[in-house]
Length: 113
View 1 (cartoon, one colour):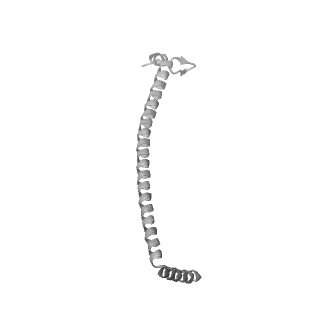
View 2 (view 1 turned 90 degrees about the vertical axis):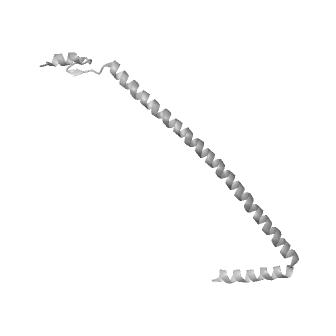
């Protein structure tokens, strides 16, 4: 059977006032392991964040290019429609005035309700 002294002697921590003090080497070792683990976790997270940022930037560039293409196509369609409208108004001015008058009457009737 071990006595209190034999138990104290078998531990690497010294006993002061009935309480054992943690060994500074053990404490540093644990601190170093925790710090190392934290550094590894942060480095891993940073790598994943960089990869994600790269993917997001590539997606944003792709979306911007698609938006520009869509805008160019819409602008071309509007320009084509305006040319056709201008051609119609120049070729049939009385018909164009009649259509504009009819649309004005229709809009007024809808807005009064």
